[in-house]
Every structure is written in structure tokens, then in C-alpha cells.
Length: 198
Image 1: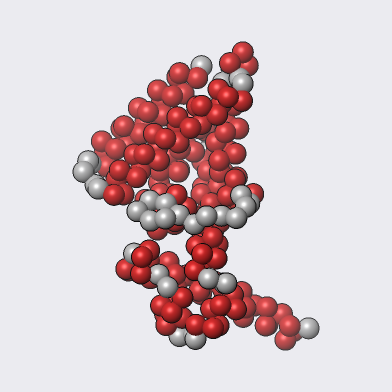
Image 2: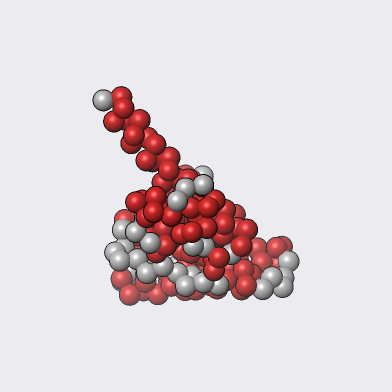
């Protein structure tokens, strides 16, 4: 039994090492440089060993995408817990989204296809859906009952996402404004959209 557990633990460690090496390569050389051969070299394994854990590079990108959404969802959950007013919670969630994008730039790039092709997920697993659902639910909570249709909530969700993701993408592809100005634009946009919902 103990040896079976040890084998499983070693497999988990190898899988974790493959993903960690992938991110390291990307941080050093960019997404275009990532290959199964480079990952194998980085962790000092042969390429066939990597294929035992991931069928191809897309499988690695899919898993990194899933992990990114889990991390983002956890940060949003923390943001919600720090406020009691739904509007403040929603603003904190979008700020957490913004902060995640720059703290985990490479993850964000693969999750949303910024300066690269994002991976085509075969299915929308719950981990990927969770942050979007959290935002959608909070928007729905804030909108007065008489305006609360699925179409209206959806419109507000996409308005928020377009503004926040757009601002992030602009800053990732060409940094031309100060952090202070970006944060002010972000705060103004979030406040403006929340005000328009009420």
C-alpha cells in the first residue's frame, strides 16, 4: 500500500514539475518557445515521459488554463469575503481580476489568448466557469428586480468584461500609461457600470 501511495505521489510531483517548467519557459522565452522537448530538457526527463502525462502541448495549455481559472476564482472569493455590500464586492472582484492579470501575466495570456492563441477547451469545465458565474451572480444580485432579465444581466457582464479585459490587454501589449492612471480608469469604469445598473 505504501509503495502504491509513493508511486502516486511521484506521479503527481512529475505532473506538477511539468506544469511548473512550462510556466518557467514561458516567463523566460514567451509562449511561442514552449515545446514538449524544451519542457523535457528543463526537468531533465525524456520527451516520451512528458507524453505519459500530457498527450500534447494543448493538453498542457488546457491544464494551465484550468489552474489559472481556479486561482482567479479563489482570489475573487477572498475579495467577496472582505466586503458586505454587493456593489463593493463586485468592485473588489474586478480589482482582484485586474491584479491577477498582472501578477500571473503568463497564466492570463493563456486563459484569454492575449498575444497568443488561447487553447481551445473541449468542454467548459466547472473550474473555468466558476469566476464567470461568480461575477454574473453578483451583477444579478445588484440589478433591481424590475430590470433583472437574463439578457440585461448578460449585457452588463459583457460590458464589465469588455472594459476590464480590454484595458488589461492594452497594457499587456503596449504599456503606455501609468499604473495610477490605469487604476483610476478601471475604478471609474467599474463605478460607472454599477451606477448604470441601479
